[in-house]
Image 1 (cartoon, helix red, strand yellow):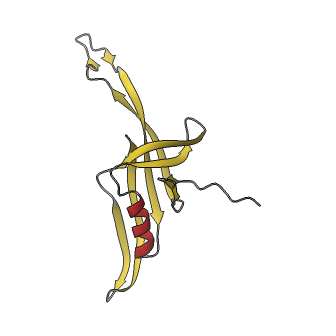
Image 2 (cartoon, rainbow, N blue to C red):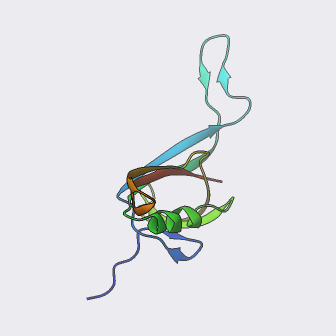
Image 3 (cartoon, rainbow, N blue to C red):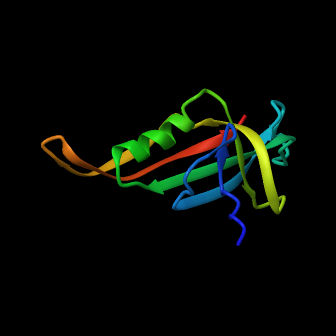
Amino acid sequence: MADEEPMLTVDGVTVPDPASFKWAIEDVSNSDAGRTEDFVMHKNRGAQKRKLTLGWSVKTWHDASVILKAFNPEYVTVRYPDMLDEEFQTRTFYAGSERTGQVKWWRNGENKRIGDISFSIIEQ
């Protein structure tokens, strides 16, 4: 049996498959977009950008760190399954301003258990 294709690679390195993966496309309007005096909206789409909201259920501090470090550079090249194009795409992304993690259990600094980490990445 052949190895399955990884869901995500970051800068050519496979990261663990996320437990949640939400795909979105965002329209970016030109600066002259808006409503005119006759109340007609002129969207004037200049581009479309992908946004991926990712979440992992992790068990250890180390596992969380590996994922967070992969996405920590200012820009990363990510290969992912694209819903619109119906194939894997490789695009440059940056991480949203907030990356969160939840601690599930902590006892005297030992047996650290992380519950989950999540954040969004947005196409450059």
